[in-house]
Amino acid sequence: MKILKALKKEKKKEKHFFIFMIILFLILPLISFLSQIESLFLWFYLGIIEFLIGIVCINKLNYNYLKFSCNNNKLKFKSGLFFKESFILCDKVAVVHTDKDREEMDIILISTVRFINIYLKPVSKGFLKRYPEALEEYIKVKKINPEDNYYFQVIRRGALKKYMLLDVIYKNCVWASYTYSAIENIKIAREQREL
Image (cartoon, rainbow, N blue to C red; front, side, top):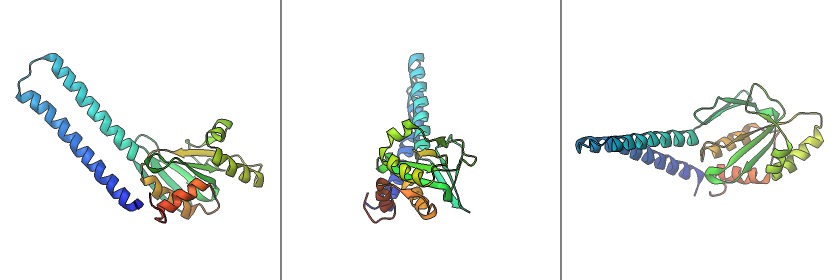
């Protein structure tokens, strides 16, 4: 399936999910009220169910939320409802790697400059053990510029919208080195391969 078709399908499923949850959120108390239930235990149980429905809706919104733009060599993105906007300079991105695929895909950016981004963390041994494919590209880049400090950021939220972000990264981060898995996912984002 092409990525644009998959994005439309995902948006439609998300819309149906929220419609169903809103109907459920409204109908459960209405039925309880109309059937004149007087049991305090059942009303308390209904309150817990309503609270859980609200939590599920917020969690779904948080998981699918991804806003991004690229202007003047600055990539801005916000991944998740409760996170601040992140900035990365496109020219300073050294390595782009992707892990997993489809909705669970993670985008890993390794940069040489921290630039007002609290989510960029220094590259550590734990990070390199977790992403061995990124390690290969990191070693190549580190040999070219051994004096630079490197920082990474992992983008986990956004579902299939991450493919569009990956395409924007590919268009603007021209000095970056891309791993094999990142290139394969870029092909999907550019509709050269099917999902």
